[in-house]
Amino acid sequence: MNRKQDGFTLVEVIIAIMILAVLALPILAYFTNAAVSTSRGKDTQKAGMAAQSVMEELQSCTSYEQIEEKLAVSGSAWTVDSIDEANYTTELAKEVTVDGTPYQVKVKLDYEDKAIGSSNGVYKNLPSTSDVKYNDYEVPQLSEIYSPNTVVIAEEMDQADVAAGNFYYEDTSVKQDDIKKSMDRTLCLDVAKISEDGKTLYQVKGYYVYEYSGKNYTAVLKDTKIEADKLTGIYLFYNLMREDIENEKVQVNLTGDMDAKKLNLYFICQETPTVSKPQEGEEKYYLVISGSGHYLEPKYFTNGIGIKGAAVSSQETIVTRKKEKRIARAIVDVYDMGAAITDENRIVRVQTKGE
Image 1 (cartoon, rainbow, N blue to C red):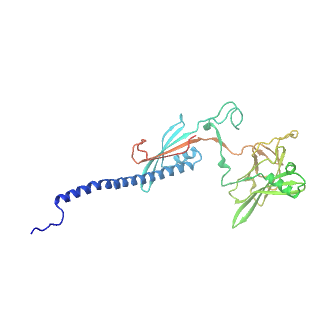
Image 2 (cartoon, rainbow, N blue to C red):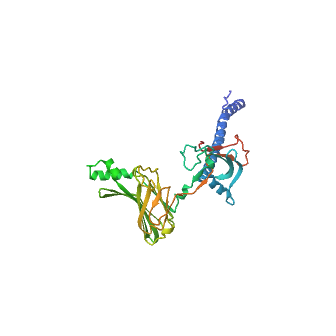
Image 3 (cartoon, one colour):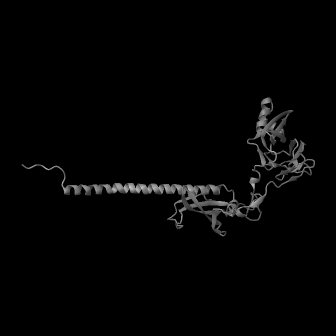
């Protein structure tokens, strides 16, 4: 009797293995490619982090001079590849490590070379005969105003309209516009030396006092405190109450045992005053200073507006001006460490918008 044999023959096994191998190859290739793509994605992500960190460092500088200061520091990670003054470009390099992976970062800075003014007189402080390039223009150093040692006071809305409205609601028999034309205003600055929590402070308060028909309205612009040994300057930026005004009254009250001589007080009009009937022999628009305490001791500054007040001198210089290299665009490229600097080898590029 013949007995049926269970199982596969050798030929059948070989054929099955061949079929399995053919089917497995695409699957293995898929996982291999996925692993490579994941690795490349992580590398690109880390390179992007390196580029972003460099860009943030550049953007923390307000001028190229500050970048140059970073380059001048002993042991600085930055190096200068090239400076092309003719084409207004500078190329820098830096090594950045992210999660243990080192990258070489190349930075290109383009400087703005456009003209910013002409003989039409639109721009102030420019020669009247020719256009001026951005990099030849002396830029006001606004950091001198917005510093830890100064207090800046400015109105955030038209306080004259608010004051006129307040007087109008108390007496609606006169039009609000007529009230505004008849109001008087005093620019007030109070500085008091105080002691708080064991510290010596200056309490600085800037405000307007409006007067109309025997009534007053006070608009507080700022009331703040600053350490006494830090305060060196106070800036009050104001708008004209109306176009035909001939002078502004300024009341400065400096109280307490303070070193007022070290204070610089700046009253900056943000509009161009025009007066229809200037007084004979006087400026078309000027400030009249009065006050109490040590108000005669500080130095007073305006933006070209005359000041009247006993023993008070005015100077037009508000902030220093100097030439600065104006950066129009920054380009940050990241490469693997040791790789040739070519477009094909570049991993990531980050750039600011060019003008």
